Amino acid sequence: MKNQDLINYPDMAKPPRSRKELRQGFSTGTAAAAAAQGALRELLELPCPEIVEVDLPGGGSLSIPLHYHRRNGNGGLAAVIKDAGDDPDVTNGAEIGARVWLIEVGNRAKEEVQFQAGEGVGRVTKPGLALAVGEPAINPVPRQMIRRSLGKVWKEIFPGKPMRLNVEIIVPRGEEMARHTLNPRLGILGGISILGTTGLVKPFSHAAYRATIAASLRVAQALGIRKIVFNTGGKSESYMQALLPELPEEAFVQMGDYVRFALKTAANLKFPGITVGAFFGKALKIAQGWGHTHASRGLADLKKLGRLTEEKTGDTQLAREVSMANTARQALEILLAAHAQPVVAAVGERMLAALRDYAGPTPGLGAVILDFAGVPLWRGERVERSE
Image 1 (cartoon, rainbow, N blue to C red):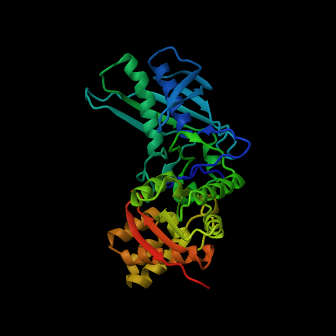
Image 2 (cartoon, rainbow, N blue to C red):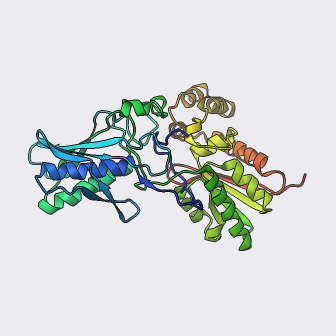
Image 3 (cartoon, one colour):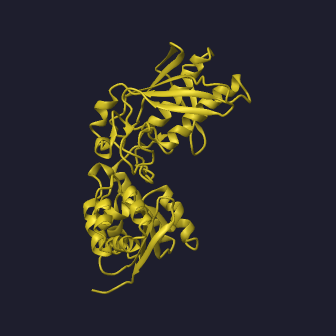
């Protein structure tokens, strides 16, 4: 499996536990936050420990060893060796460095942290991603982690004084690593992306994941639950729980990318009702017949979506814009701006048809397409039917 260091998709499912617990690691975002903290300590001529504490987005912290730390010209420099645990990740063992120096522009009181892409860190060149064109490929959550990590050190010395810092993230060999990802195709050029929504890297095991899906379904069955709601990860699950508050927690099952497996297993266990909630990008893949939707297998076919757009709207210019979009996120933005709801509905109907192929003829099926903020764009159902 190729690594997941591509872009932050709207959600990533929680990896399951296997009988033999796999070792978890930490993300490139966590590594960058630790390196930045060490670099700032060097800049401010503070004692720098060999191990620093990085706060995680979901609470708690992680102890990260520094590979090195030293002064560097007018700044501080530090690095961490990325440890992906037992996850097959091309960035495992990579050096993730940070150089930090002061912003010296007038006496403005506004706090500011400016991010720069150093060697081996990509830069966004196409629209449709979570970052604007021209920005370093340091995703939003890692940026928050870096700011917080820097802030802890800054407040030790300058409580109440605005923090104004330049932060350059450096990944030697990052450009070479990026060739093994989809970054070049997505327009992230010059290196890898700095990623992480939780700060942790939990090991990915196909067999363990499928076993966890099956176990979750058996628990729901034992509790007498009759309607299962599949989703692709933590974010979509929380949105679906808010949408269907009448259902118990055990009715919601994270299927990750295993669409075909999840539907077939639930159907074999005779659940009379199955609903799938997914963000538009995953929904589009399902609609296009993807039984497994992981990014390592490629991207949704936006040219097909363009043809569907022309079929449903008759607007050749809109269809061309959709087909030439960089990502499914950008394609959806184009469709919503054009009020092309029939196209989204057509994706939903095709999604339902694909789910029917996987589940077989008997269970009632529902599908929900979410936008990237979790707002339902489309809901549809197909009642139970006999052969």
